[in-house]
Image (cartoon, rainbow, N blue to C red; front, side, top):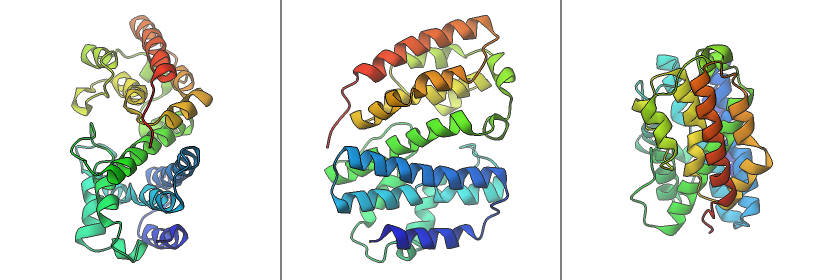
Length: 258
């Protein structure tokens, strides 16, 4: 198992996709952003060299199904394709995993972690090491998504300007879900503001204290919320309430350790 070898193979895989497409380019940047976040978390948690290398490879491959989704549909919407399931299909049913990791020693951990990385909630994993890696990829995916929400073009990933988003309302079920410490169920998102709220709601689904520390250190909650000018008065008030609630949660949540 060698991350650098896996990275070389991943770059070859990307040759089959249009890197000039804005959405494809964003996903390539995101992939390496997740790898970087994974390296930081593994260092903070003092994981073994083997677990760190395994975690980096999972980060590299976690969104491999996204590229085919974009090629076919030019969309990130979950209704077009289950990108996690497709990634598992490509890697394990079609055997591509051997191009990245010659040994089959870690197949179950890699397969399970990728299959569940975008699940609404993480359930059904009983093996402690597999659970560790499934939680790691979910946390680091969210950490780099903070960067995405702060830096990437809103028109590309939201399909609207900041002003258009902030003029909309938050659907009641989406607003209420925040205070249940739950992620937003994708079908419940109706308005662009619902989508924006969902990008801070996932802070309640962070597993490790090390991840929460990074969120605090980078002031991600406030920076994401403040990217949008909320011209809708009700939305502005609700976002202040969401900010206060989630700031306390991020500060006080014990997180889990390994």
